[in-house]
Length: 227
Image 1 (tube, rainbow, N blue to C red):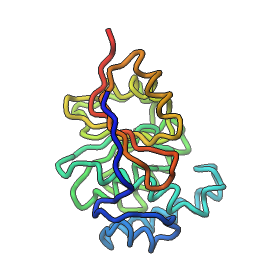
Image 2: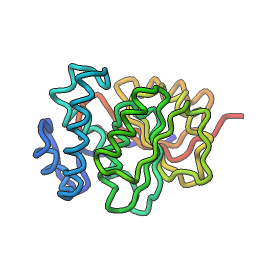
Image 3: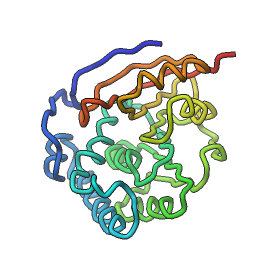
Image 4: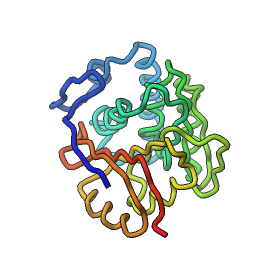
């Protein structure tokens, strides 16, 4: 198991030390195109409308959503290889990180699959992708265990879905020799790695989160069951 840390840097090597609290601040931090921001603005409009009706995310995070959800999701983008064509987001919930990464990768033709078993959230994901003009998104309304894919994804993402030991089981059927997993993890990542190592050989690199001192991005390049 390989673990290392890198600094709080984005794709253009800029350090971020203050929260991203608005769409303008997000735009400045990510240096993304106006087309991407237009899609994210439409996405955010629907997100706010639906959040007033349904519990898409914790209400306490709505005010800081551009940092807590949008930028937290977007920080994964710098770890996605330019040649990646297909991304699978497990347990997509309100679309973080899947919909944000679909917007950021739209110009490059990144195809994004969102897996969500809860009906109202799957419906929201479909409406949000359509409303934001993200025709590179496919929503799978089903349990992860039931999803079948003819072509393995290049990238698999998950955020606040399950402990690493369970994540390894979830992603195992989707892995190719070159698939990279990007998991957003919290302060208990060491405990999760120790527990997962009882059943899985894991090769991983740890990156510091740009949005939380306690969080990390766990980049996993190999997962093999212990026989």
